[in-house]
Amino acid sequence: MNNSDQLLEKRTRLKKKYTQLIEEAYNLRQSDQALSDFSEYKATKVLYKINKLEFVVRDSN
Image 1 (spheres, rainbow, N blue to C red):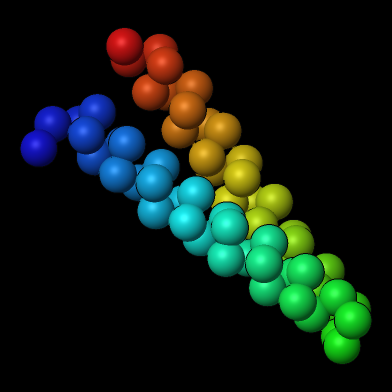
Image 2: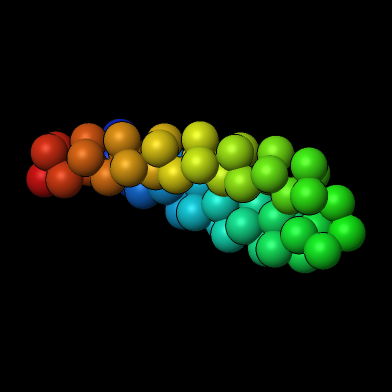
């Protein structure tokens, strides 16, 4: 497995985690606003990592 395959796999895992966090934030919105905000914050951090990876993957191609 070469480096670009590893980066693509990591990007896939991060996208899945991002989706889970956004769904969690949406589900918590009505019951616990603080947990919802925290989940959105973690999702934002994951999205930042995804964007950095996409830049690296695009640059390596």
